[in-house]
Length: 177
Image 1: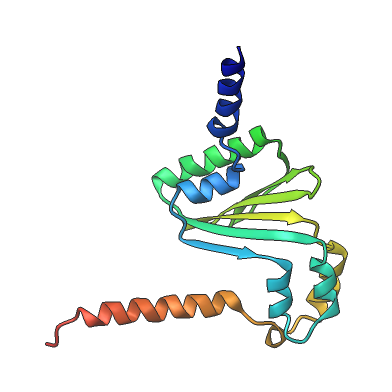
Image 2: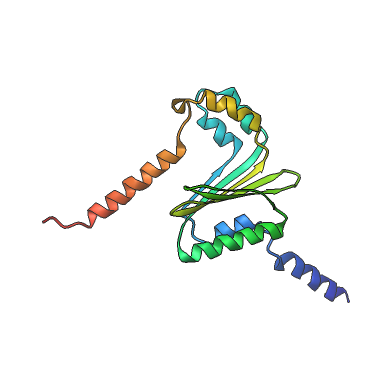
């Protein structure tokens, strides 16, 4: 009997996939872009120490962003992610559709609340996962006083490096005429 209890316990511990649905999605599938942000990272891009921005992110635990190219099989993956979010306990609280994007927003009521969004654009799907709270009351002041020269644009820097790398690889293979 003791061995049976140990076996059942081991199956429960080692047999269960304890990763959340968004983590499984990103680890099990090829993502075109992946960004992970933490409050410390976000404070570093705030070059002028804008207080509204700091108050916006002060209760954020972490954020993740993934994009996946829109292909026939990616729609099935995204539909599976939506179902997994609901199964995990997320509640769909908002959807919106316009000419440029379709989006669904999901919330998980937990110790550190989580917000997930799946955004369908013309050529890609974007998945955003935010753990913790954003002080949304600071968004109007931030937008009113936003000056992109006072924030480090990490996405632009990473895209520039990728494009430079691609160009160099491509030109190395060309033969002169």
